[in-house]
Length: 228
Image (cartoon, rainbow, N blue to C red; front, side, top):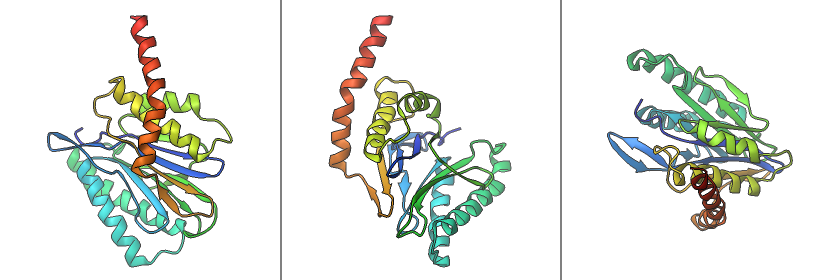
């Protein structure tokens, strides 16, 4: 279905959590690049996979609900996101002919007390139920293409810095090798180190990560080309 095109990757690391995403979306019949990760309240990072229009409604509803409730903890934010996710599914699944599977999924990360505590990351399922991620998870249309690379490279004790490099590689390899045309754009990456505020990696750092991973992608391309 149009608009479900995305890769969102979340991981628990030794020193905190990370959420990364590609930027390619479809609006109407055109591909565009937009940020897919947002901060509904200070200290919390969220990213949703689903129809573009539904994701727009999700973002507005979560931000409005969090502001009105004046949330004080990550649990409160997640509870609100659960309700919004379930409500959107209930409202639109029959109209769109969906069975609820993959309708709208969300990754949410933050510090337990928003401004302090251990960094945690959760997966909110389409039914409006959240589960804590203890290793890593990939959601979105591009999940089958990205997950093998993440599974092979993720390890216990990995740092957010190392995971940022892996995330960049996993997202770019899908685009560069043309494994799926719906995935692309410069990766967007947030890290939340334990007891520290969420930080979006600046464009300059993303550019450096791309330069670091390009040689590895080229080597994979050459290997595949020689196998033909």
